[in-house]
Length: 329
Image (cartoon, helix red, strand yellow):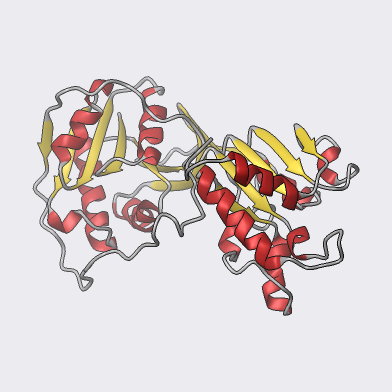
């Protein structure tokens, strides 16, 4: 028996976990947490699962107490030996405690799940490990972006609602403050990852430092293409060294051995040298391209599918002329 724990509305990461669970060849139960459970169940009704739900206003927002209570109720009601959930902030926070409550075990950041075992990466994707456990229920948090989302047809579903008394809470969620879409430059679901290197803030071939122009060109390109923005470690570290920086970059943008590991379909590096610490972060980028004035840079040594030997400023200026409205290909 397999249980997939999903929040409503169902995210892309949730659909990826559902797709993975449907391939394991066992009886499937989907546990929904949040509001509008019937609508969410209908959207994935074609998966043929049994549907359980913990529904109501207390469970529509993320809090440890309510999330843990809902997940515990779903695991106990389903009788599942294996529970799968997307490795998002919500479930990373709640499910380790749930594993303790139900006497089970938990593993996080799984990239592949097979009957009886899971695979995950360690040491910044340099070591792959296969894990197996005898303890049940076994809770597995699956890494978003490591597989395809479920793409079946919607169907009318029967939802069994569990009566779970909300636990006492001291946290009141009054709302969510988020950046405007035009200000958000980290976009995990984008098809393209654009990475800026330290070369953008160095002296250019005319001897001038053009940080302001670099900022304008990069943001314009990222916003018009809908790409996600990344940075090399050397570039974000400059802010602590008193050097000229691109003001919108933070360590959250850092890509590489000491930063994030993106899973975008395409990657375009600009003014990056392409050394191993940087390239290792591109392990799951399928198509790699780079822009660099040096034809002998690291990207040219088997690390990029295409290397454009050109000035990145000139390339992005031409790209700005060719691109139309934001979101253009």
